[in-house]
Length: 295
Image (tube, rainbow, N blue to C red; front, side):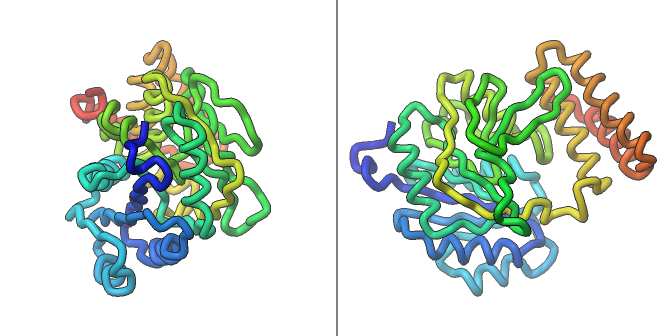
């Protein structure tokens, strides 16, 4: 529950991760600067950008707090750094937000209102629309994940969250009590599957998931990569997917085989040999880092 002093206007900290993409981050920050909800602190965690992102963001957006990791620690680690700082500052709600998002000025207020109306909700999601096709829903807050195959689906209309449901971390407002209880995001994967992992753990800890259905956020998606089938992305998704299934699947060995079989089969069928090689490298990454990803 929120503290007595924060009942009407809880303190919100929005955590954004940047990596060599100050252009999208700047657009996101502009939209956050225009939020009607004023009890909002913005924290940008720079993941070791090799360009002039930090200088540009600090110069043009001095009102935002910029934290430098010094190296590319991965999405989960960067979010945990920002969230830990937010909690130290007395934040009631941590809003994880992708840097390639533009949020209308009433977004924070609507998310907070939903949190206040639903005290059992540990994570509050938003309705996401495609940046390039603003009339099309990208995700209605989140979706469900198949624990046999590791494949997830996004809701595109109001749906009930089942036990395998999750809120996409493109936009997820999380109560401080959830962070304190769960100890933050799982850092065993570099990126991807952190939202499904956190969604499952949140529900198992007794909280619910909900969506502020009157929100309408624009999400560019994929700003850090060259495309959905980028070999870099394939490698990371494979490693993180295996890590997730090892932790959450009903029968991990079978689930991991199904996950890899489907990925390898699809890439081979489409003759995407670079992507196929990336899947194999991602499998090797997981095998050689078991002491890290299986903790």
